[in-house]
Image (cartoon, rainbow, N blue to C red; front, side, top):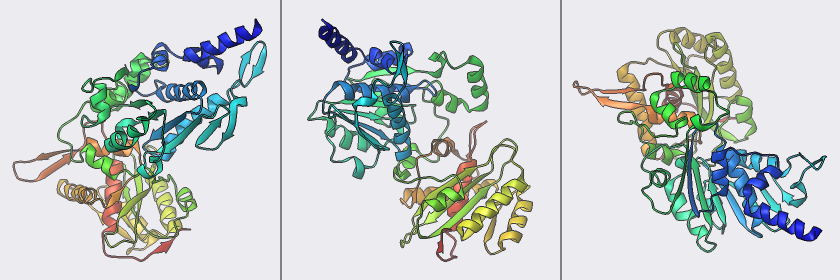
Amino acid sequence: MREASLAGKLRALREDPILFARLVGFRPLPYQAELLRDRSKRIVACWGRQTGKSTTAALKALHFAFTHRESTVLIISPSKRQSELMFEKVRGFLHARVRLGGRELRPLEGSVARETRDSVLLTNGSRVIALPCSPERVRGFTAHMVIVDEAAFVPEELITSVLMPMLAATDGTLVLLSTPWTRDHIFYRAFSGQLPGWSVHHVPSTACPLISREFLAEQERALTKAEFKREYLAELAEEGACFFPSALVLKCVDPELRLAEDAGELAAMGHGRVELYAGLDLAKLRDQSVLAVVEREKRPEGHLLLRLLRAFPVGTPYSAVIAEVAAVVRSLGVVALAVDRSGPGEAVFEQLAAELGASRVLGFRFTAESKAELLSGLKVLMEKGWLRLPYHRPLLGQLTAITCEMRSSGRLLLRHPPRGHDDMVMALALACWAARQPRGAAVRLA
């Protein structure tokens, strides 16, 4: 009788992922339960920020692995770090401590045969593996379930030509999770009903009872209309003619490229002898000061790689910005630093030039015309394939938010939407501009 009861409980856990969720102490919200119980082979989930899509997907991956012997579940994201973030949620469930029958237990821990930072092997032979969306890293797998996080930022060709074929022999399941980003992508076509056979889950942040109305109202005031619709309402809203089309931006994203936030982290990556160039965009009013550092590869074309992006908190005094930027330039041996010399930037430029040497610091005065020229130069690098960017949502969002308008005078007017920002883009453009000037020699990272 006891064995029959145990078999019945195991069968219930297999058939109902909600019971499995409760076993590890997770009580899903109604919309999360719908996704967990969805057994469709093609699923698209367009959810707003903080709605728990990564947590829900991690639990769905784990339940599938536990209930399908010798299966392979892949977690794919635009970057290795993003994939590892979701995999951390998988590991969290595996080692979750819950109270059952008056005792504290880790109910799933005994089923772990082998575990690393980005993969786990269960005692039933199933594997869960986290990977970046690099074709070289993904090819060769035969999968039973593939979960693509931030799918709208993963190249469509990888989804259709690499991921889908690996599910063919297993009749496997593909789950796409994201907020919308562009209409010209399989994620949006599946979400908008243009592709038959997809199960669609649309959850705006307003549906999450854990997010207060006051917080959403604050975000609506702080963000542009398009940003708020995309990030919190999970709806696509395009403003004007994009100067940097989303397809062009995606083409420049390298899933293997890691982005550092400070000089110590960049130095620890150990790239050997490299040429580094920096750009500093200074805060005006409510903007942030941003420092970008790019590496110029040793190729005839001089390909540029964004290595560091440091956004200073709003309100950071220029004196603190100067001190940190000077320290970064010295510690990394930056060849040249381009500085926003507009308005109050003149004093910052002069102080940095005095501290670092006039030949090392380049000034750039922003006008409508010079800004258009600077961004046009950045766009040329992108179009030629000479710029590689790590996956960084704020930067990608700023790039695609810049609109262009041809004035009657024949001049190109570039601008970001009201309440929007372009400080990260301008810092990147300045760094690339500095790198294209004929100067400097290779230096060694400290």
